[in-house]
Image (cartoon, rainbow, N blue to C red; front, top):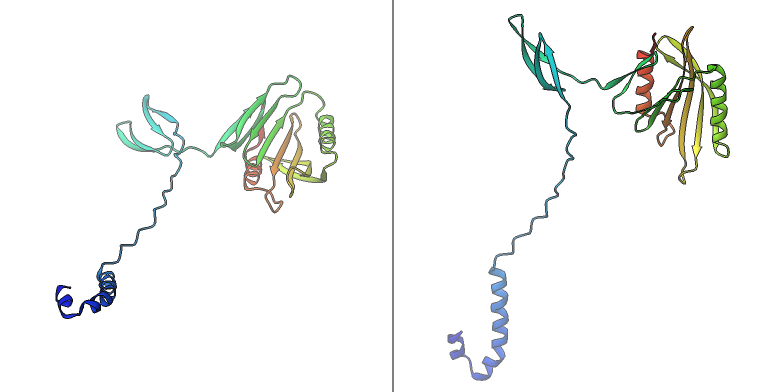
Amino acid sequence: MRELRRLLPHRAISTVMPLLIACCLASAEETAPAPAEQAEPKTITATPDAPPQSELVVTIAGKDYPCRAGGAFTAEVDGKTVAVAVREKPTKLFDYRGIRFDFPKSHAFESDADPLTPMWTLDGNDNVLIVMKPNEAIDQFYTDYIAQLEQNYAGQKVVLQDVRQTFGTIDAVGKKLVVTLDITAAGTTLCQEVYLVKDATHGVIVMIQDSLNDKAEQTAETTMVKKLLTETFAFHD
């Protein structure tokens, strides 16, 4: 810069200096390293913790072995070491008043000890299973119950159909009510199947309720419940 100032007349300096400064600044910008690109912030996802497992105790040959469902351990039996695996069934056992069957363990259990009509409600996500054991004439109770359901849905779109379902060794007949409830703009479709299940000495009313999917089809949960009723239902004394 000093050398250039000596070579140029005074007026030329005043003309050229702004241009020279601009050129120097431009040159500096060209040679300066480009700022590093900032990395996009990382998305952090969190997975909810699973509920704690039940603590179990398995007794073999008089000795207790603490464990958890899905775990394994070794035990001494008659001087031999054996491997033991512990698994939890995906079902629970319903066994009340001579009625027995398996149901999904995720269903909540509720009991109503009405002296005239004991009732049990097994409540899942899409499925609700209701078991009733009336102490009065069960055939008339079944007929009156269907009539009461139809009356409850007066003003709603209801389709009534005959249905059949196997309960263990019993082929039961029933009525299916498909109800479109005006809860939302699109409507919610509810299906209730009511069965009279009886043999020579036992009788029970079973209602299988399902909140149908968006295609008005039976849900996977209700399909599983029906399968369990077919495979495991039985009366006993």
